[in-house]
Length: 213
Ligand SMILES: N[C@@H](CCC(=O)N[C@@H](CS)C(=O)NCC(=O)O)C(=O)O
Image (tube, rainbow, N blue to C red; front, top):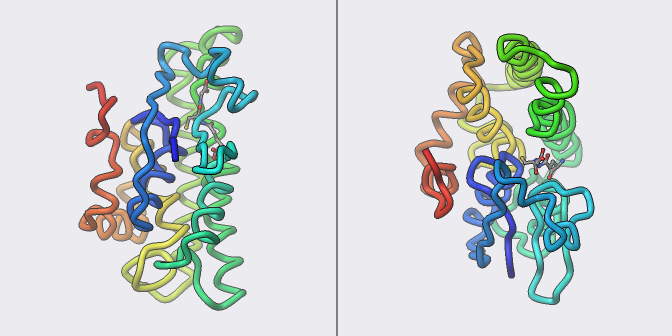
């Protein structure tokens, strides 16, 4: 199995956490986003969208989109499960994951930020205001979703799952972009609980072979 990712890519980070939880160790191919390697012909042959991550399975199939990769991993390696047994809770966990992967994360993506400061000519401060606006609002919604349920160690219970896998890289991005989320206690508690786990720690950007300070 071959995983194409980048240390700072949050959708790659989600997959790395899941690989660790599932005990899967794919070969790693770094695609340097700042150098534009996602636009290379070789990478676009895997993902014509030019976005990370991409996974080439042992059978040679190419999988893209982190949520699809996570679901495939969970279907092919059911232990430990990434979703609860109860269908309602599963739908809630998927909803939480989609708040992050479909609503928050796309607005912080490199190509979007480059467009804001490039074609649209925004100043760095205006770009920061954009990030502040959308990342904070999205994580406020995550806090609301967690507040509405019994407080458990992880988002949806006593073991980490899909929601935690999406939340941790999103909090990492908030920290990176200086978005203040100190007033979000449940988000912060879950983030801290995940940091204690080796599978999450090993997946962190600073622990990747292509890490650059
Ligand atoms: N919805 C996609 C998002 C993919 C995505 O936006 N990847 C980012 C890195 S986290 C990327 O490759 N960005 C390159 C660019 O913006 O040029 C997923 O979950 O996999």
